[in-house]
Length: 262
Ligand code: 6PG
View (cartoon, rainbow, N blue to C red):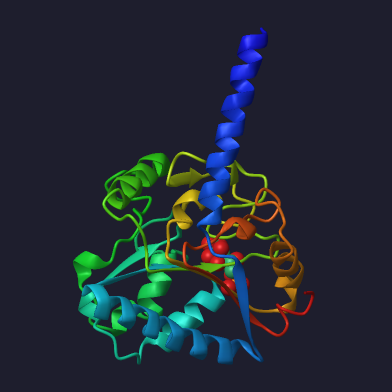
């Protein structure tokens, strides 16, 4: 009994140490605040174009994870005019609403309308999550597993864009949900989501934390409490966005209203 307890204590100390080591390599959050949502969208598009161009200059290629939501959509629309080598860019999603292909509520559909239909991206490098009428049928677990397999050859992302919900969700990781507790898988199916549609596919926090840069973009007073809690170090179970950090950069990009409770 004693021996088992000791081993458990050692194991738990080792696990805690491993977690600490991993956490130490993640970047402490910093913030940038703009007066308005429009300014935020235009400045973030410029910042993103510069980050991706710099990755392309260094390695010949770049990768970005897209998000849904109004703020993310406005940034994508503002990115249309960027002078980027669009053909050397891999595009992924942080989450997807598990709906039929082309559904206007899919994050992919919205990203295509905002940006991808307007720029010469390489179609094979646009890595959308499967729709509910695709090759995996209406099985979000199979869709999540297929995306996890795709990501096995993608050790990191240059920039992971994320939105933030009023209650602190990010991607489709909601407070106190199974997804926020996931520590092994990189992509999960999300069911019974409090925000419609109820079924989604999402990267997990451990996978988001492999990104070089994580940018959390949010606007409006309704987000102010969640922003303040995350930046004050809330537990990720309570405010999942607090657990989204990049290896080199964790940047919260806010408008004045979203920053107002800090
Ligand atoms: C979704 C949305 C959602 C969104 C945030 C922020 O899948 O339901 O993508 O996660 O990103 O709620 O949205 P806003 O930018 O519109 O505030």
